[in-house]
Length: 416
Image (cartoon, rainbow, N blue to C red; front, side, top):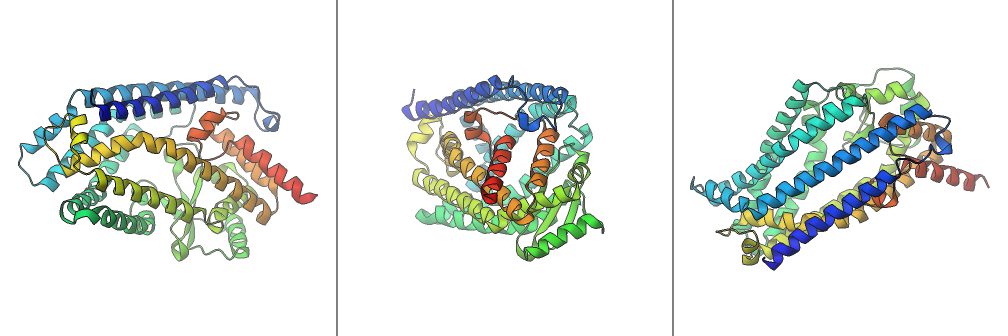
């Protein structure tokens, strides 16, 4: 076997075993007793339901991961990439269009393979535990919209990347990186107005005490906000959330309708304070900067190994091409990036702790945030005592129990 192919397969299987080990260890924690902190907010029956939900999700995720890895390895080792490339070349299109169709076909194939898993997760697991509200019709409408958006946005981006690498020489990776970064910034501003309304309905928050409370807090922080909106998240799930879109004078606060129903006005403001904390602590910009750096590194290595014969030999390709190089570099770096994502997850968890502290310091009522976090945990049937390895690999937010302990510790230290 080609050494490079052996290395790639080893990395892929190694990441699979690591993730599966984390899931298994996490599964062993699903018999832990209800933590004392939650005994006033979650009864034993609801806690048992959350354990069963997490067990079922864990089994599903391990099974899905195993099937997808098996299919991916079979496709690679069976020469599927070369067969697809030779078939598309029969149409005798130029190299850029051939590349767009090649990568687009692989993307579509991936979506088709994952569709049954998404269906089962939505209409079996989420339905069983009372989360799902989406209809089969809406489910398929969402998938069709995602494909059309991918064609309208991803197609031109891919065309541009292939054009740069085919016509601009050794600095192509830099031009691609800069162009994609500019596009990502534009999407931050245009996405909320053009893309998000394709999936959900957004309406201005009605006049009343909740809006007044939010505006009062925002004013105390001198935080620019163009509007406060509600989103009909309930048409897909009972789970709730809140988020900001845009920057500066285009910044909007969006509250799920389910979040408004399940929390008091004061709790909602404490959640808002947490989200504003991310902005005031520059977490959003730091995350974007990290993403841009990662993208730049990927483009650099793509430029470095572009059309390298060893890559095409490893994947049993008959002909060398720029577009196939993109796929091969992506496959090679995916498990490596998965390992390095551990650092990104750690930074994200630190940011969440800092945003919690900001909410407590500025809204000055830690019990409100704690109460909101408990409701969020109950709302999602969260794993209250996850294994540290699972947290390290997959948690962008610290476990709720850790966040509550940190809030109480911070509050006590301030009162001394």
